[in-house]
Image 1 (cartoon, rainbow over the protein chains, first blue to last red):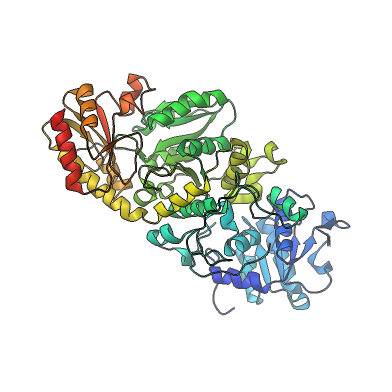
Image 2 (image 1 turned 45 degrees about the vertical axis):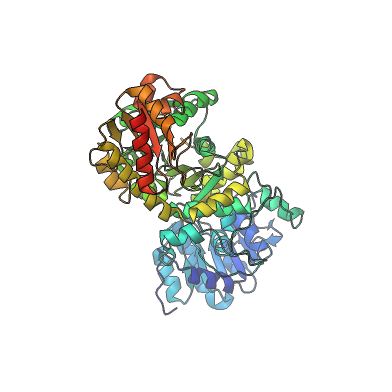
Length: 170
Length: 430
């Protein structure tokens, strides 16, 4: 990325391009419990056509939403595009460093830290390694916001457009 | 969540566009009226995801409806809030706002100058839920601090009070609320988001009767609760409905799961689901149309009202005028701080001759309609003590600015000279 990303204020274009370019998402801190936030996000992203790859060392041997749970990013076989982190800001730094290390072999393009999770030093290291970073946001909320679904719940999407958008099934 | 700098559209752009894109299937540009109760699921799995709140979508119009959702996003955008929940009336909005915050035995503090209907709802009907209200004179913020108790869950005021030109010091009140770890709720009905910006002064929730200036033509009942998204519901243990496992929703913790969307999600998924005070789609549509011209109408409402107030203040048969737009008002400085574009169009006055003369003025008007509403394109006149504030004691009436000689005006959009002439002849008759 030549343009410096302002992590206090992401443009819609940045988020939209990122979400449209990603197809598979490793979810670190994935919970098998249906009423936990990570489960909500995985279920939604899976419904929208993303492959989700749950990572949780305490849930290995289990399946979440039909996907095998891995103990670490390194154990995931094959490539994945993005790492979505459901851990606190400090641990998110360690996870980011793992992802940066694996980026070449796994073709990882982006790091996403969930709402309230932010680690600017780790973000700078990831960006220096050529990865895109989003912090303190939720991919479910951003996907829903940019595709008019968040509006259905009465939320302020801040999106204004007189264009006729494509109909998505979901 | 931080705002996108690229998304800072102006107020007028948002009052016309926010929440409403062309309908994707047909291309219809104006928002369709989804006069419809229920929505077909793709399959059983989709249905389960919707009921679990795991995906966005429509189930049943008691909870959400596509036309109502457009209005919700529009009002949320105009207030610069995170989200909003529309409902059947302004009173329904107040019930919905407190429903998420209060447990039986809890209390809240409210201004003693509220609209009379709110005083009755809070003081009498809320008692049946074992919710206790403490009415205080909020003009001195110390009164609010003194009234705080550990079971107090909110402070409630009107930005501009109905009927009498009283303006709340929102910044001072929000500081008290913040210190106490409770939300400041502001009824912004009389000012509208065009004149007053409660969230910019630290308010946490805003409620509206959309029946008034937002719809603007006296066609449609409606209410709305707007959440700023800024309140930390987990900062203390006062709000278990939002920040602890919610027994009414499979033990879901709304704040943990939905973050700054927790209040609005709760207000739909539990509030509207179980209180059932849904806004009708047709009313939402009429209110959407009203929002499209809000700024223009409010400018004229304010301009007409200020000139009518000036006329009355100079009239020899008028005893007093209470309008924050007038320099003579004790609230004029607060009006300039909180409502620099205008102090609304609802205010009160009294004629020499008291109660009887007041009734005579009301009955002698030809253009002013004698009815119990405000915020209409038509000019309205009312004698609160015998109507809207009738259920209050005389002491409460006086505190609320609705004493025996008070006449309330809601100045509309007619030709100014005609309004002044009508009041002049009515006062002469009295």
